Amino acid sequence: MKFIDEAKIHVRAGKGGNGIVSFRREKYIPMGGPDGGDGGDGGSVYVIGSTDLNTLSDFRNTRKFIAENGRPGQGRNKTGRKGEDVVIPVPLGTTITTLESNELIADVAVANEPILIAQGGFHGLGNTRYKSSTNRAPRQCSEGTPGEEYDLKLEMKVMADVGLLGMPNAGKSTFIRSVSAAKPKVADYPFTTIHPNLGVVSVAAHKSFVIADIPGLIEGASEGVGLGIRFLKHLQRTHLLLHIIDVAPLDEDQDPVQDAKKILAELKNYDASLYAKPRWLVLNKLDLVEKSEQQSRCQAIVEGLSWKGPVYSISAINKDGVQQICYDIMEHIEQTTHEDSNEPLKVARDE
Image (cartoon, rainbow, N blue to C red; front, side):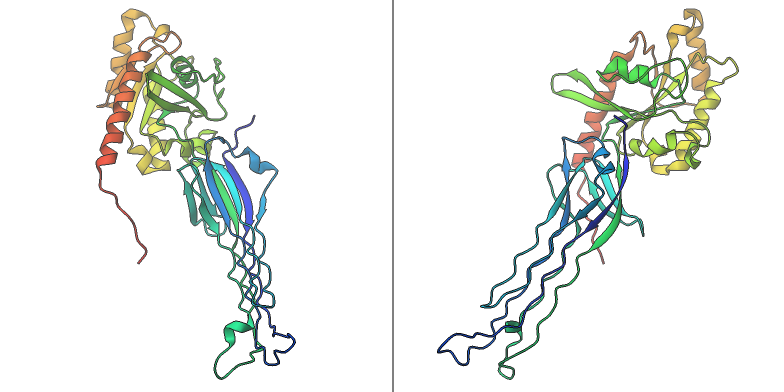
């Protein structure tokens, strides 16, 4: 199935029901007075996070979501029925913005928690509401207000703990195959990955993390060149980025150091906060390098990048060195999660 990470939908909440003008007309009650009831509120539109969904493909065919209008009031002070709400299930990690102003409406990060995205209209008032000591037979009522209506854009950001970063054909898909049960396409030519792949890496009992493989980046990706820009957003929620570098590129003129610098430049141009995330250097495809040259070639890359962070030398296809990096990733995630849970909660309030 084709991965769909963006969708456009139209939502409209229901209109509030009108109030009515009515008077009691019962036998033996000549001065019955007003008894017009209020209308019912219009139905609202909600989204709810679902763990059963992992793409936005359901929105290819269903794009309009319209809640029910409230019913008008009735005589004998009967209130009209409220319109039925519409609840839209979306994958966790979905953000919802308005197309017109790009205003963020919702960020769905918790399962089974309804989030209001379009408020139903308020009910109209019946003439009973207008009765007073000076107006005992009011003949006015009010109409219900329209419900909110929006054209919305849905974007799904993959909920992964670790993101793989690198040039096309750096071995990212091979790496995710070697550490998880995910089976992304692997071949000896660029851009074999055309949509994100998720894999669950189990380190020990009750210890696992999710890793995301996205299409490789090329120079100019932050400006829309190639496939990678479409998927850079999937790295924004990760705890850690693994920058995978091919130490034995097929093209002898290709410089791993310059390629890595291009990736970092695109990352920084796209989002400074994404660039600031923790990154580990993973030097891949050591199996294609003579053992006597492995250390010197890896050292040249590290020095060329002036790299100060963690460095791992692996062969993803042979699974050499991948177990240790998985243990270290798990330890890093647990430590990061613990530190986040100890931070004081900050709540932003509208002035």
